Length: 395
Image (tube, helix red, strand yellow):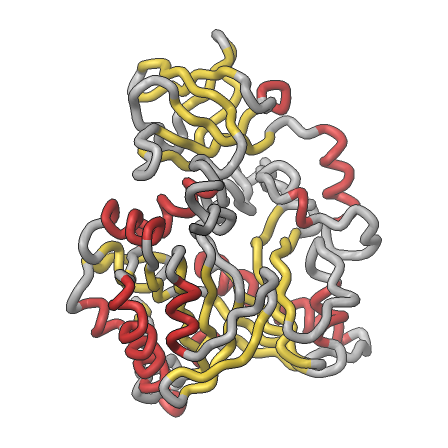
């Protein structure tokens, strides 16, 4: 099982468990406490298990533009874009963040569960293009050469100020900075609904698969120590994967493997989900004419039979993945993610339902352990955005 660079630090303090081929911290002081720490102060996440793939050269951005649903043609340097990769059927291969880190440099941040799949797919496309005489960009899987930390919560920007880091005012923009002598990239993004940023740190790892590339992980540890020194006085805590999941669910964000997938079940039946079905239609540029899966995606948009909704239970209970959703006596869909919201103290869920039953304010029922529980279709986020999250009113 793979390990992140700060494995020993986490293992001394956290309950560890397997996740996407890595041994990762699941929780430290308890998932509920960690969840509320992020909502009320700040949390730091080690997300170095996520895939980081690098394209270089004059063709880096044009090549990448052929693979995603958003239009990257005019994307400026030092900007990032959340977007989707589709297969030839219009199914979602992955939802990713594309960073343009230089005139001829592109960094892809991909879901850990999809890293090997996306890496193999890009390599195959490059090989095919090169065999046909096309100019292709340089490419490498740089996951093991980076550490990646996320700082999230209402005090996150205070921590950045104390560190001397500049967080871009615009979302999905990047700047450069330095912590404890280590140069890094600061990216204004997040996966909790709160304001915050990610720190992308070039750092050789003691667990690198190539023995010649193994290092001490000193750069990652130096940055972590700096963040910790600035964050602890304002109540920051390390956060595990359990709280990361409940935070993203409260914000209404999808998780690949739950709300989105690319698979065939059974072998003869294609059951890919498209970006339009799983709530990522806003990442599909309607006027973009050329990218993998475009025609199939637009064709499938004409006859959608499922769409993602947010459900808040009005009866007591906790919805879980695969619970069936009903409108009267009609089975109209399935829960993809569900939990008890630590913040609003109600059961909440994301669910794929027939579009006829997706209107906000609609009343549905979720079957939990054989009992039908009343639920309402609500907008995201599940919490009051004037009191919590990035758009909260500052006092």
